[in-house]
Length: 356
Ligand code: SF4
Ligand code: SF4
Image (cartoon, rainbow, N blue to C red; front, side, top):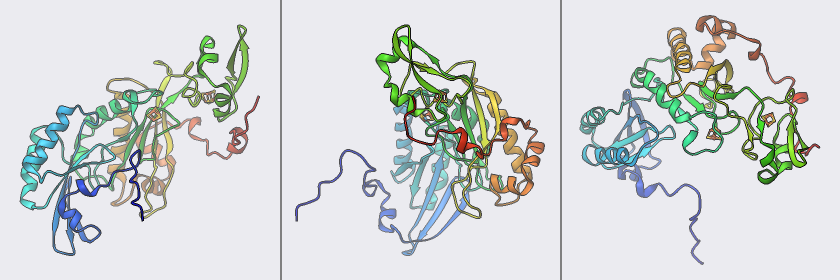
């Protein structure tokens, strides 16, 4: 039989060549794990082999000098094997427990905190921001760096009722995730259209179809084919901007930040949940976003003080109720918190048909 052509153009590479040899040898045969201290995990295999994982926080956007430094630490103090997590942490695997403390010291000496495991606040999962994406309303990576500087103690200590996952998104519609606390950019004004460019740049039917509330119509402006937006219908989602950059929606004054809480992907103890809006209209105040940090810290401090052991953020809120959540955190409750999608059938454009 002809040899199958290995995929070359996409997909995750085979992890085995990069994996610690003890992990390759015991693949699928681990029988016990524990959490000796914040940022350190211990695993034991059927064969009796052991491995320790040390998790260090990074600044997320790394230059290659930083990556070389992290790799040098792996060679000098670890076993030469690392992996990056989805939250931009770096994990070092060592098969000898006596290497753990020197490795932690070497990382701390270079300024990398050890933590993010179990009931700590983990590193923020975030979207690409200004560096890689064409539509962000703010810089996700910058928000992450600024916030994690403030949440340093909560990352290196395990003092929360349960794990806390945070996420940020630099637009409202695309790659933002569910999280215990999610920080999401929020546009508050309809797009401004540059009619001179629309006909050259935008495929108008695609733009019309993209709008979730059917607010965009084709129009002739100054004799040129263009588009118009029914501003009463527009929910300022920003979905029209990617297929039509002349529909500019980012705005230094009117692009705000909202905070959502109670999202959960796991099935542990309670079912997965969608997060819900708790604060809106916070200033998009680069480079440190202090107003956002203040609200996040307020929510975390209340959850830490009031949550029972093992309660995730949403379990805690379900127990005390949403009115108590707003009372205890001191966040104002406004009419913008009320939509429960009951009217979605009527006010969302749920069909793929193009409307003219
Ligand atoms: S959240 Fe939106 S703006 Fe940010 S990287 Fe994803 S698609 Fe781009
Ligand atoms: S796609 Fe979103 S931002 Fe654009 S017009 Fe429709 S509702 Fe408004």
